[in-house]
Image (cartoon, rainbow, N blue to C red):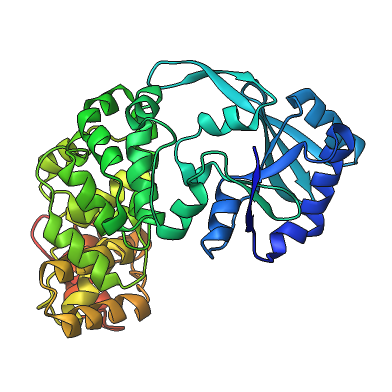
Length: 412
């Protein structure tokens, strides 16, 4: 693999003492050039973006990586040693170090791999050309596919080799294509061969676990502006394999625009899915969300205590008290996305939600018993007084009198 003329610009992660310590350890065991940076850190640096994770590819086998790190006094964690991955820790910073690999067999969901010393073979098994760019510790870039650097420059997401073959090796690559398109690609530079392959092989997504689909979808939705990528996915029929039923495309697009840089993948998911409980559950049936995530989606759609852009401050506080801040804010955003020409009303409600502190209902069983209540009448009376208190906008006084009145009600 020959180096091109491209070098990484000066970046702090390349000369960080922790990075230097890990590379020193590996090269002490395997010689100069036995390890190179790969993937996101190289791609993002070439694109002028921050590099969050530092991944390293190496000719060293996993046991040799562990030994090299420990000899240098660094921590080695065998996080995926059966696949060649060891996490090295230097100065409390993790580095994912993976032995060069080649695919032996694939079945559309997982691959059997063998270790290799061949950088080109390692690049050939990666998904996209801009993810198959390597750089040595001096910043010299190596581009074995011949197109990765240019793809990063022009915002193109192109499969390594034949798109259909790459997808058939792991059908998750269909969703990864649109996720990377959302984060790094330009709509006007979308690769036609990749789109056609995704459209032809979209049914392979059904072989994937719900967990893998969900994780990839939420990453896509977390992009700063995923609208162009989702449009491409919809045209290719891919969204129909992930979210069942009719998508609320207008509300989704409006929400992304109105939030103006605020990223909330779960709320974006709610915006594109139906509100009716049965339809919502059907739409999400191919996903595996946590109970907390499902609770939030259902609360955003619940109309037991409806939220309207027409409500005043007093009604807003009452609704906030009943459903909580998260559900209230979610519903305001969704209502605003349905009526994008009402920014003043929406912002006013969001301001109330952001500043109002929910008061604690000051009465309980002790006060009810003192008022002469007992048994089931206690809960009934307290609920009635609480309803009055909320309707009156949470007054400080009058509660004891209302409880006494409730105690005189027939059946109390």
